[in-house]
Length: 435
Image 1 (cartoon, helix red, strand yellow):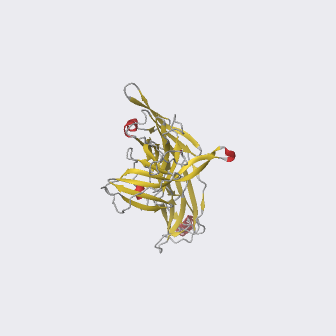
Image 2: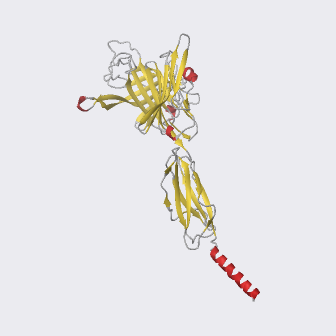
Image 3: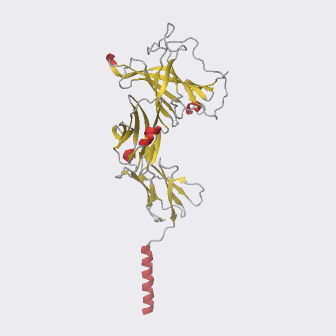
């Protein structure tokens, strides 16, 4: 007799149950069913209703390192309730890549976000059976995001068969809406930072059930940024009499996708080379299989650390007025840069914030989209010789702030008086010689 074990945890307002059994787990998530409702005046659009629902992912693969610690099996309601929204989905084929993160979100105090909505494939009528649902799953602070398309399974109806009151679909004997997973689009990286003029790989993949949904596949990558959108790359697989061939059209120079991996492995990742500031934004990966399509969204951030320098290599103070000192932070991106001045006298053990932080220039933007900024201070003539003046620059592209410094040297007598004294001595010398 097989023993089924369960772990039950509480996660920010909803529960998550893991049932371990013979290398697989059933993960139960509290979700929300999102539906478009009637707007003002009874008109559709612009208004959505949100109804609590439960998603049961059956047969999630569990690695051998997972421990079996608790005892209680997951049990459906003893009395089926047609008002409850219980979605039961078998997800063993295809599997959900990276789904094991769902098992550990509780330990890491991470929130699982789950939304369901009715889905209409092209050419299907929404009122017909089978019905289809889209599920969006993501975990905060973890690179896990996936979109699932579920198809309802046929239920043998009899007089005892219940119908879900909201959806009008037949329920199983245990009161669940039986479905199976037919299509997954996923990414392992929800946000990525890449250096200016560097290269980046934006991850996107898909899986489908063993019986292919369609013989044709299409991939489209789009970029959205600051209210504007444009197509980056498109791939279509075209069939001829003997085998399929793929046509790839990249509208952005230096964009590419591996068509062989798309068709053979479900790898729709996009490569971008020689990155520019204009490449930054939200990338949408859309995968189409016949009448089905789904998306993933990846944020690309362009970064470029600043080059910093001081206006002088040697700082000799004037005897009567402050000495101007400038710090230049050049060619950085994004705009967020902070410049601070510190001093370290010969008697100090730690740098101190400079009393007068001076003034900042306006930001200067260059043709490549990067920025430059300068900070100016006046070093008082009373500053002790040997004091180190430090300019420190912080920026998102830096793991830690950069700094440059110069050491204050003793003030030198004015050369005018040196020349005058030399002339006087010379005149006196010749006067004595001639006399």
